[in-house]
Length: 208
Image (tube, rainbow, N blue to C red):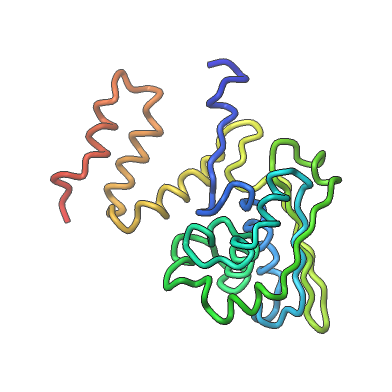
């Protein structure tokens, strides 16, 4: 396999949101760990992103700034940051019950402002770096993410891939079935055929 081949340059979205929001979620998770109290205590939140055309378009989209649907929510920087700061997590569950309409989430979204900084363009080429500043009445917090989990600067991030696989498949596959699939994939480069992988991904006949 060539060192500069497509596989070695592949990335995986660690979080179920738009690609440009991956670092924003990672920064929000980091910032949440800094807080002593609930996210509702924050008085202001600033999301600073690289000055790319696609980021400017996403930030300027009013439908994403105040999402009214699941599709808009997973493309909304204010939503993904707000719900992550409140829950301390970001996955499929964060969209349950139309969380973009949750008064607590909406209230925090109202405190968020967004801007871009061209200095971030060269800090993480090919990625979408993000800096989040947040304040309470007494403290200030800063979280910075250049390369989010799953961004492959050298090779694919195994932990990020496995975490996403388990998060997505856990509602429909038992842990034993997921383990068989993981084992088959991890050993595929030694296998002479895809027979074991084919058997692992076939759910028919898996005992309950």
